[in-house]
Amino acid sequence: MPQPPDRDAAAAPQRLIVRPFALYAVVALYDRITASPYPADRLMQTFFKERKQLGKRDRGFVAETVYGMLRNRRWLEWAFPDLDTMHRALAYLALHEPGARLPLEPEDEAQLRRAVAGALEKPPPDDPVEAIALTHSMPDWMVAIWHQQYGPEETAALCKALNQAAPLVIRTNTLKTTREALQDRLREAGHDSVPTPTNPDGLIITQKANLFATPAF
Image (cartoon, rainbow, N blue to C red; front, side, top):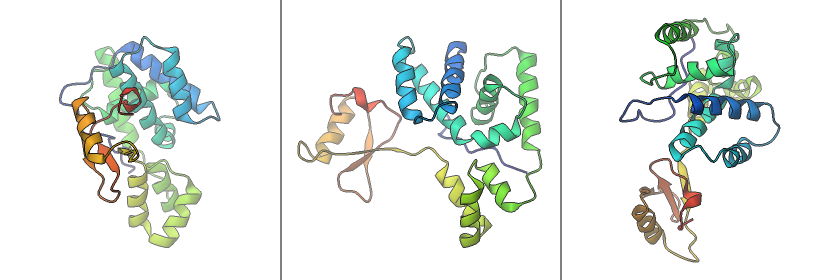
């Protein structure tokens, strides 16, 4: 049985409330990205510039949800072939934010969650390469190479690791400051960080943040 894609982040301390206009923004942005040959981050930047009414929290929700759906696109399309983007987004949220308050009537939400439970019970393809690729939304040709070199367990672990959200890592401009001074400056602006273990100039931002808007950037 294919497993649900891993959650991208730790559970929030308070219940996520999915607001309808933010959900519509998720659908509009996801459809724009999947229909375009241009990079997702560039399209997302343009999308948010066009919708200045979206606040910081809403932009964060939209970006995280869209990127999560893109990372799990193949599995979502296989699990829910008859759903449109709106309902796939709701299904994704039901999987990754099980405690979220969705903008649905109780009977509609119950039906959605039954569909999600049913999708998790769908038998995977018989071919082990296809099964791993589908579960982690990876291309078959790539998984086939790894499967031949590393075997099924290491291949599945590799796919799982590659399909998780990457941490936000920055590099200090040492012509202007030191890593320690930059870390202090970011902390004063409300952005905590820890030093990278392998790069003497790097910092890992511990929480998601838009550093492009900070004076330190």
